Amino acid sequence: MPTLLVLLMVSSVFTADPSAATEEFGIDEKAVSYSGFQVWSITVRSNGEHKLLRQIIEQYDVEVWKEQKTDKAAITELLVAPQVQRVLKVKLTEADISYGIKINDLHTVIDNGNAKHNMSSLNTKTGHSMDWTKYHRLADIYGYLNYLASTYPSRVELINIGTSYEKRPLYVVRIFNRSSSVVKPAVWIDGGIHAREWISPALATYIIRQLVEVPANEALLCNVDWFIMPVMNPDGYEYSHAFNRLWRKTRSVTSWTSCRGVDPNRNFGYKWGGLGTSTNPCSDVYKGTRAFSEPETFATSNFIKGKASSIKLYLTLHSYGQAALIPWGYNVVYPSDYSDMLELAKSAVSKFTKYRYRVGNAAAIYYPAAGGSDDWAKSIGIKYSYTFELSDTGAYGFLLPASNILPVCQDFFPALDVFAAKVATMKV
Ligand SMILES: *[C@@H]1O[C@H](CO)[C@@H](O)[C@H](O)[C@H]1NC(C)=O
Ligand SMILES: *[C@@H]1O[C@H](CO)[C@@H](O)[C@H](O)[C@H]1NC(C)=O
Ligand SMILES: [Zn+2]
Image (cartoon, rainbow, N blue to C red; front, side, top):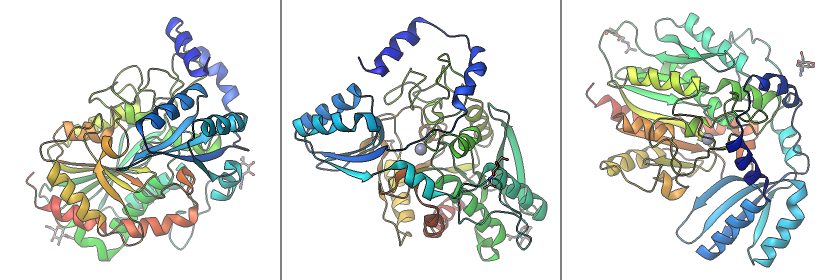
């Protein structure tokens, strides 16, 4: 019987004592090894093949990294553990489904992806330790935000909007013209909802730097305010650096002691618990016990709600796939102003010169997933709401090498001109 099913059955019968979880925490503390793990890409061209593939995935409890649809095919990328590689090969061959191995040994890629480091040393020339040539730890990122707030008080306000499950501060950076008393329309950008998607906080902090420290970008602050939250899930982010490179969720204790964390992007309060979510605490898409059960999504949503009349554009940064996704994501349903949203997204991605992005309805080009932050933002009246899946398209997936950080960021930044120009025209 598949493990997933066993867990589901047991967890619905017993409710474990949450206080026991801290004692069990020790087993989590050893770094997880992905030695011999592979990433496979599987293309199916008919519903029948797709159904067969889903059966195999469920039977062997294989983790899906990404599932993307095109007109003629569905491409599924899987994380395949060493012990199921042989049987999966047999099953797929029997079903006449072809597959390719995209990453041969995950462990090697993880080791090469980011030099193991703790907090970087302070660069006395820049006054902080960020350099965007590696993926920085939270201490570097938060150090940088504090550095900016004290160095540029005329345009930076560091707002502590709450604390994470493990009591780390949750920071939003407001970038604005402090000497102007006019209330301006605003852009919201967040990164790091999913812990392992390291390119996301890297881009969010890069955007902050461009807006604050590069005088040539000052015009972007003339008519628009910016709220940027570079790391929405700091506990998960640190956990992905220190213990498990592929950690995705928050780190809260669940009813199932050995499985921690809720998928924050299934925990927002619109159509919560619908398609593409799980009631199983061990699942990577576990929705939590209720909408906004996580302190991170709760604090973020409260802050955004408080500014809902001025925030005109909600942008959330994820990886991977190179796609701009438009609500609704809970199912293949299109908002009445979808064409406005599509037009702006197309115009934004047309600024990219190095990477090509697909643009479309989230549920149509990926898969339905309820409780996402983009749907929730749209539901409270923020007209333009997008999820950007950043690079790459699967060569490294979540393990995008650090040498790609600057190319991705530089390619992305000009799209903000398009967003800012649109938002500047909107009435507060
Ligand atoms: C990081 O910190 C740990 C614990 O303090 C230490 O053992 C390790 O050598 C450090 N690594 C680097 C690269 O400095
Ligand atoms: C900031 O606002 C002040 C007061 O309205 C104005 O004089 C100044 O030019 C503004 N600066 C920028 C960069 O927009
Ligand atoms: Zn994500």
